[in-house]
Image 1 (cartoon, helix red, strand yellow):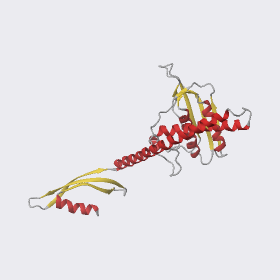
Image 2: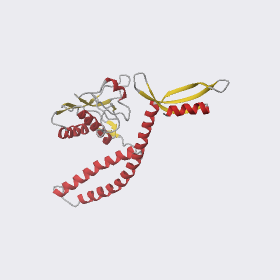
Image 3: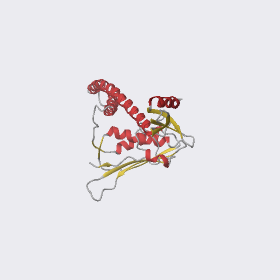
Image 4: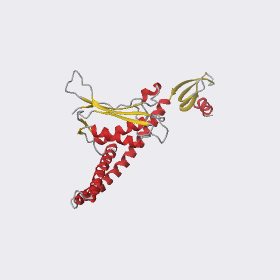
Length: 278
């Protein structure tokens, strides 16, 4: 119907500009297209034919969708940053009063133990706030020399408590790995995301392996030492035809409501990139 109207306009006005239509291929599938047409008339002004350009706009539509998603994330980041800033002010007071209260009780008392737990949980909450502020671009990632050993061990314990009994958690953690320069909170989030993705890829059970070891050094740069943190599973993996898309920020193989972060999907062997030794 739209093309019929455009054709009538073409004969009346001689041109049609940016007509958006869906075009059907020989195999029955369709694709979005943009058509520009110029009419050709004979000497008596009778319409003969038109010169047309047809442009496939499939990719443009995908880019527009990605742009819209990025704009939504930017708005979400602004909101998260504002909330995180206000919550951080409250948390600062909570932590301050808790630490003052600790001094009023004997270290062996139950109250002292409970308050110590409050301070510890407050430190974890502060880490989450830093993540939100980093996401909203209101704070820089706090990178410093850390060891990944406690992060790997703690994540393994969490997985053992929370994963189904059909999934075995195996660890291979070298206690003598080098330090790395990284944000501890972000590293823990990366490792947790990899483990959750691995879990989702093993609906019928399997084995989840967390490994931490010193990586191979670059022969040309002997001082450039690296640490390798990896998550492997015995899950279903990724079909070969979509493996090239795994690093697209908004691509996912999961159903709506099951995503765990941007670009969430299952990999047969999810592996974090090596980090340079500090």
